[in-house]
Amino acid sequence: MRARSIETARRILCVFPRYTSAFGTFEYAYPLTDGVKAFMPPQGLLLIAAYLPANWPVRFVDENIRAATNEDFEWADAVFVSGMHIQRQQMNDICRRAHAFDLPVAIGGPSVSACPDYYPSFDYLHVGELGDATDDLIGRLAQDPSRPPEQVVLKTIDRLPMTEFPIPAYELAETKKYFLGSIQFSSGCPYQCEFCDIPGLYGRNPRLKTPQQIIAELDRLRECGMTDTVYFVDDNFIGNRKAALELLPHLIEWQKKTGYVMRLACEATLNIAKRPEILEKMREAFFVTIFCGIETPDPDALKAMQKDHNMMVPILEGIQTINSYGMEVVSGIIMGLDTDKPETADALLSFVDQSRIPLLTINLLQALPKTPLWDRLEREGRLVDDDSRDSNVDFLLPYDQVISSWRRAMEVAYQPEKLYARYQYQCDYTYANRLKVPVSPEMKTWANIRRALIMLRNIFWQIGVLGDYKKVFWKFALGRLKRGDLEGLIGPTMIAHHLIKFARAASGGEQNASNYSIRLREASVPAE
Ligand code: SF4
Image 1 (cartoon, rainbow, N blue to C red):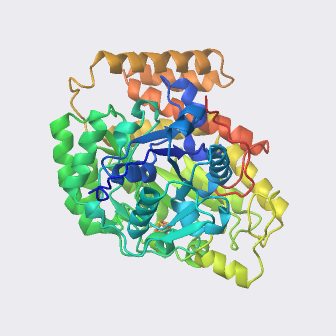
Image 2 (cartoon, helix red, strand yellow):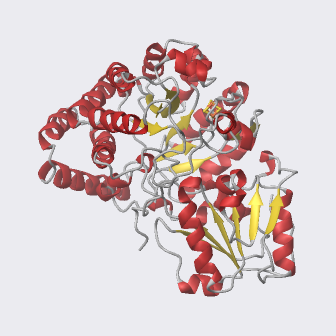
């Protein structure tokens, strides 16, 4: 549903800020694609855009693709911004630019919901999810589009049920310019890992959309030209296992009907490995990747962070089980935990070798507001407010030792030989277990063939000819070419290129050790 119609129309400019360079946004892979400029369409802003009264004109600008122009600001009556902590500096910059045009600026999304005090210059703070605060904001702008004399904070008390969410306005986004598509099925997570702000922000009882909503969204994404991988951005796809099991048959049917044009990916807890009935259906629905927050292979550390559910199955066995259903595991890893020892980096590197997971986001612990970790460290006087550091946690080990362990882990884990060996394993053992999908007419379109040819040209030229790890590349690439496996060639080589480049920058001290670091560097993805 949309907000109720209001006669006075206002023109709303929705601006999504640039990302600060991060491991998980894959920007080093973009030059190998056919014009990708940004990571994923932002769910939150596109949802708000779809919710606005039907007669309110909306423009959407993702500054990872292009910067909002003077003409955009001149057109608008008000500006909406949303983003995560890592985009804080860029969000404040958008506010400053909008104020130069004397426009009221509202901010919503996860960062302001957790930390309203990060955003003193915005006119409206929308704290919480879509709901009564959103209606209040719309009502106030309808009544008076000028800047209020002082900041107005609107907090959602009554959330709109997800079953009433409109389809995000995907049609406003340039879907072809995104690395991945995005979709949301649920919000919230039943667990309470010490470092995580999801239960505090979105609750422990997952809220859900209906399978029919998800199918309608997939149809819309397809109409908007999305044909690649679509990522379920839910914090835990199996937060409500019964609901996931009810959704999967609908996804399977949809994939059969539409010819498997989309691969699916999601985030889920590792204990999914205990649920063969879910994994089998995910395989049939063509899920190809699951991001699991493994965090650490150390059982004592998992216990200390209240993530015991990761140990319901021995970790390596769990990963192998998921692989046996054709799904690659991507893993989150945290360093700088209280349980870390001087030998933690070695233990982690040996886990990387044994698990054969190609892609692990290795971050330094960062305390986020609204988490049990934050409260504990505050009590212990171990929160550090120092912009020159890569984490706001006063580690038990010396800071320099933790940073150099992290750099070493990045450097060794992403040596081209090691990374390509892990991808080779995935090709031989994981991808081989995937559903053999028919080649549908939609996959054989000239546009798709052209796209693949452009990516191959870029990969062969930039890595195979100009690259500095071409020997390793060609050994892998020739193996894939001999099998006629272009997909197995394109996907892993693009991702590997990003990982190798990013890890080199990280181990050389040019990248943040935490995705949430307050040490905000200049965003590396330039808006045009
Ligand atoms: S399982 Fe994942 S989403 Fe849930 S609380 Fe733990 S880290 Fe957060």
